[in-house]
Image 1: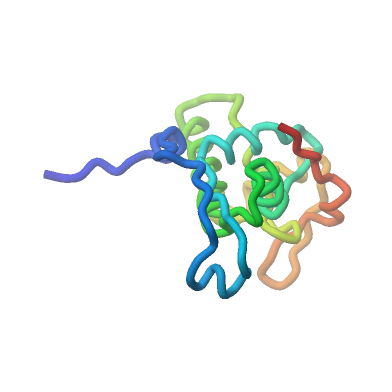
Image 2: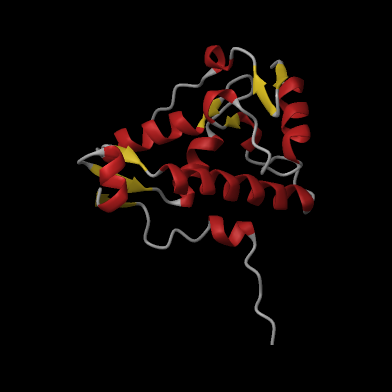
Length: 159
């Protein structure tokens, strides 16, 4: 009997009791000091990414800062936030594969420092094409693709 692989949409729709606020312990406490951390829910990440309008951008760093403020904690888990942005993007990719025309605009969410995300559907090439179609300039620096002056296009997140 083969085990059914969960779709990204299934993963997006399963918050598993998150968001969860915890005290920093162990290696995290050693690295970041005393404080608290929020492990976000997939639906929170999707909700924030959905707010980014054409011509605007957001980075994972701004998502994390917004969520930390929302939950009144020291920080948002960087690893989980990065994983969840990919889950959201791939769920939107599944929607597109099924013929949906209006999907969550995941391509407007960048890695830190304005870098494109190779793990999004279609990789860097597709994200680049979508961003350029919306008026952004993307350059290649070494192995990284970066949106030029991305800071000037950052959206202001509000709850």
